[in-house]
Length: 147
Image 1 (cartoon, rainbow, N blue to C red):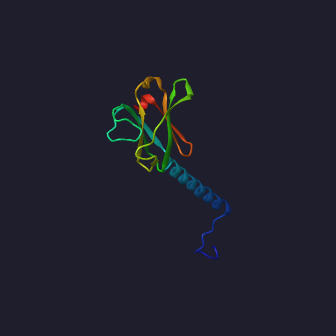
Image 2 (tube, rainbow, N blue to C red):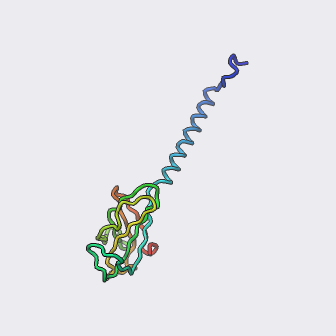
Image 3 (cartoon, rainbow, N blue to C red):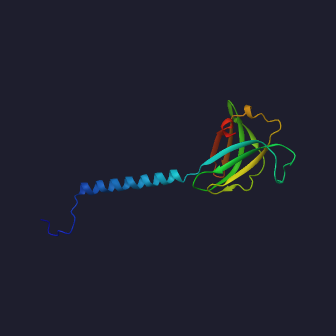
């Protein structure tokens, strides 16, 4: 009998295994948290849009592509630029000029839209719509899937 019966005796090997299991569970928790709350962006394109309210630099009587970015992740995202790529030549970029409306800083579940003049733009000749954030991350979506 152990001289102190109320003390649990654990040998070194068992103690090491308890440490390994606890560390593994801790790492699993961090991985799940990081995956769940990572930044994610959904990109959609709505062709044939007219402005419902005046936006500086845009004409109310022209037709635009509305490029909408929605933060579906768990952390904030600050949108920077948007551009289109062409099939077979992803380094050739067609920059979308303008400002994100209502703002470029998106919290979880918030959306922003940037407008691009649709006149003379053949959507079927474009490959991807790309959006870059302030940290340099780039999200891409095939134009045919984004519409």
